[in-house]
Length: 332
Ligand code: AQP
Image (cartoon, rainbow, N blue to C red):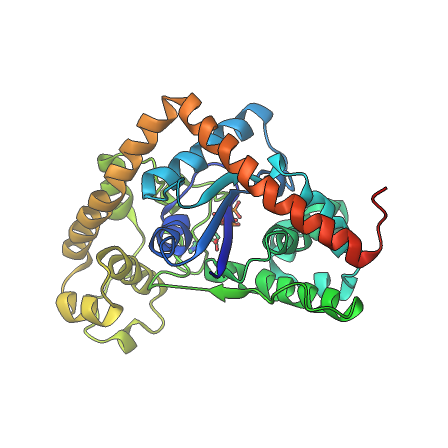
């Protein structure tokens, strides 16, 4: 069976983009693939984190996976730092990754901003650790949102570089799976920016734990333009906020943007926003409530992570001993 690996950083404020761009797709893939879903806590440390907050957010992401419908009996759910092989393989990959490849990564440029010289080595090497996450399990498919496409291409390049250097076909070249109508959900305040956990404005995103009133308020306050909704998809050109809300509605109702403009074309945003708030509450409300229930039982969440770490660790140890042999490390 083909193997999937994917993950979310436990950096708080899990949002609708994380759900529609990643987690919901995983739920649908779990019957057809051997799935490993990680809470990538080492990645979170590439930017400063409050230690207690990091632990809490790790449990929160785990609860989100479970509440969204990922079955821990079918899939492995674990946090990255509980399997030391991720860091070890990242080092081996760091030794074969040219700086030129990392210099092209746009996410580093965005996150480091103007203070590039002060950015941490971990932030720069983030895509190398991501390649290690995926390839430690020899995953063949990686379902992610569009923003991770470039990092995934680098993972393929690193797998290819390793295979060439050691004249082997040990690592598969992992395929991105960018699925659904909402592969890049944009901020509710600015249709040209990605919806993001780190956006300082809580009104820019719908959090997975927001209650019904908060979701409805955020949708009502979402930025739009003064024109009525267009009746063709082409009419969304140059209207990023309208395109974003219509894409979200299509994804939530599992229809297409063409269906949505056919239904709402010519209507005012106020009417459309009421309908959007209803479908957002219907989808996220039960997930948020189940997350709260799970978070009230930390023993249950920790138990899932513990079992997942054992299962992931077994695969990782087996692969690492093969990798050690390939690269010439001695295990006396
Ligand atoms: N806006 C988005 N639309 C669609 N998919 C998204 N993803 C993230 N934002 C969107 C997908 O969610 C998964 C987990 O992402 P991550 O936790 O690794 O971090 P990220 O991509 O950096 O997400 P954020 O929310 O924007 O966090 P910050 O603000 O910390 O950078 C990935 O599959 C991602 O594609």
